[in-house]
Image 1 (cartoon, rainbow, N blue to C red):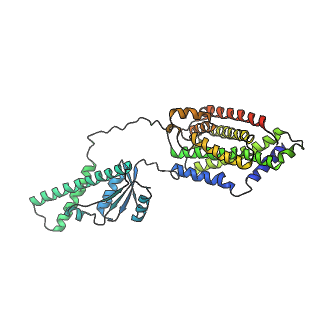
Image 2 (image 1 turned 135 degrees about the horizontal axis):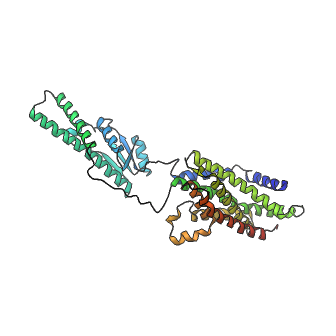
Image 3 (image 1 turned 180 degrees about the vertical axis):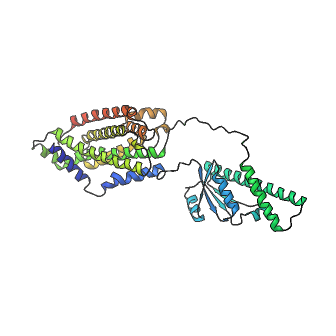
Length: 397
């Protein structure tokens, strides 16, 4: 047992001898997780974000933004013009609404007002946002028309004593018209479809689970590089002169990498819980089973790969390429439902596919141990097969 711990500790020290290892161990996984998730935590509001620049600061512009805030289609986000222009140029927002400085009741009653709406070309969200702005501004115009009609009728019955009296009456009529329009009964009922989408996709959950699998599989496949390095340096050959069995060496090397992979998983899951507000802790037992099964399957594949490569550089290149390809095809970067049906069937031959299914069952669907038994069993099957091939083909030279 002491030999196993000594070998595992030696490999851990060698792996983290350079600061660059932390780039792959923690920094890159977190960066890619946030990028693919669309930012930390995301927004629970499904409405389209509309950048709003209020240059008027008038009661009428406040009324317009309040009406937009009640829209089912858009979510107004008030900001400065420079920030809105920057986000629009970088395509971070589909549309920008600029309320001009003269947007007030005085100018509205005197004539028509113009709103500056900028939209991204060929963008469906922008089209929806513009239509929402037109609908809201149309309701405000209708309320002003009602108020003007009321003022004209009141003036026909009895002229106002002064312009100030007329303006006060107009404001009261406008407020009453807006209140009546807001309280008007819904005479046409709209039924929203409740059919579930074929793709059950939560970008935060998919990103967290997918990047966890990606960046844990790649280092574990890198076990092949450790074998190649030791073989090149003659370390493995010198083991023959000691009473250390092949199984002891292999177990020590593999267990050290698996333990580090489990530590890495715990850190990334903790990031998902604390920062991205994901429910990774729904079933600790299921999570522990999937973590261990995934790590063993990846380590076994790395062991097999290590019996075929000749040099450390060759092993490093193959482990990165193989890890990225398996992650992409296994649904770690994009939902498998986006793939053709034949591809969804074919990728079941990859351990990353089963690892992703088990992790999503926990974090995205809140399922427990029973739901991950099949993916975990398949992963352990991969581990048995690849460990068997790796041990059988293992050579000291």
